[in-house]
Amino acid sequence: MPRDPARAARLCLAAARQGVAEAQWRLAGYLQRGFGVPADRTEALRWLREAARWLSDPTNLSFPDAASRDRYLAQQNAHFTAVLACQSEAESLHRDVACLVPELPKAKMW
Image 1 (tube, rainbow, N blue to C red):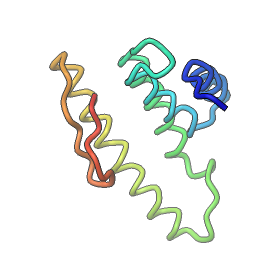
Image 2 (image 1 turned 180 degrees about the vertical axis):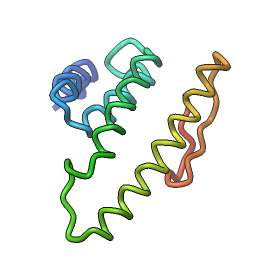
Image 3 (image 1 turned 30 degrees about the horizontal axis):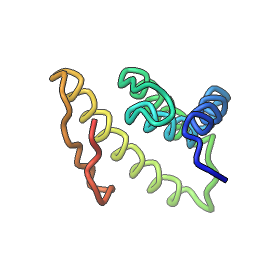
Image 4 (image 1 turned 30 degrees about the vertical axis):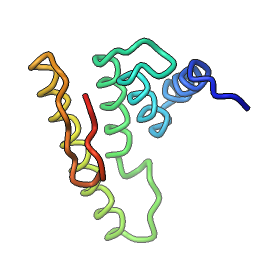
């Protein structure tokens, strides 16, 4: 099947609107890069925050024990905090910056 970025973005948007955090995360990336949709950093940041909010609620997740849940939530919080801080800084500077997030092997451009 050939790649269809516009269709991928439409499907992610539909799932994101239904509260699917993975779709919200992917849609934020699509919007940031202009993959299948016009690039829109403000909208990308909004969807990234939605994903972070959903993933930070432990009632939305299933874990074998409380310690596993707490470790996961601490990692997610650190990750999203770092990404959002970098994006906010880029927005305030009105330019692209490389966001180096310790958990990611490569820099994210915002």
